[in-house]
Image (cartoon, rainbow, N blue to C red; front, side, top):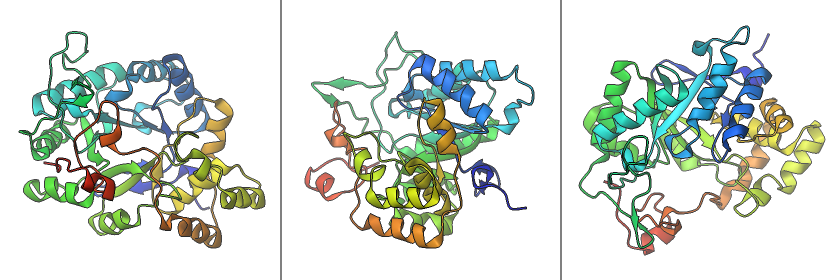
Length: 334
């Protein structure tokens, strides 16, 4: 019997297996995220995506504590991803970030630890921060950038975390091929995963072409394009998605999750609504015809997550190398 789509796993270049369908926790409130994780596990979800920057890992840890009393719960059966934030890229601060994450989650290890962005913020002391380092050090609306630190140093720290067993797999997020080359050539260690925004209007074809032969697995965040103010209306509400959902008697979210899985991406839709969590997890076998129609929609990429140099505070770093970033004269990743 073939494995159901929502139970399938992708094999990483380090031999470990990541569940294709998970639950994102970004922008989920404290009580919401605890309930969402508990409900998701009861629905069969075994992949949970977290991050230091989300500032809700304690609540995810509370969910895991609650679930530890459930029959059949086994920590080794679930996949937990977390990420070190940009202000914690210096090796000693990356270690502080990981240790705080492990403490908050109540676990001895994470299954996957990612460098959240290819941007180094200055490490500024903050007594109110759990790690003693400010998450977003800024002056006059601009993020303070650490131009002396190399991402190679951060990656070397991650390699050590893997050797120690604190992070079973290591990877990156929002990295371009150039960024991956930057850290992998001097270390000889290629990331197991690159987590990026990916959906039908940003299908990441060029990145996929680069990552596939290197065995770098792509994990898709914002698979629905984000909220309405971003590109959610264009992605989740796309007429072609609606047409396929009607034909297959499914919901638009299920169509988009199924498309991502068929493309070879693991996918982490975010929701705190029980019904939506259940629906999103019910991925199905999308036909080749419908898949190809959705792939064809990505000819003109739409990036719902925005460009970091337009954030508030603004990052003076060229992350995605878009024409807009090139024209803005930003710092190149280092």
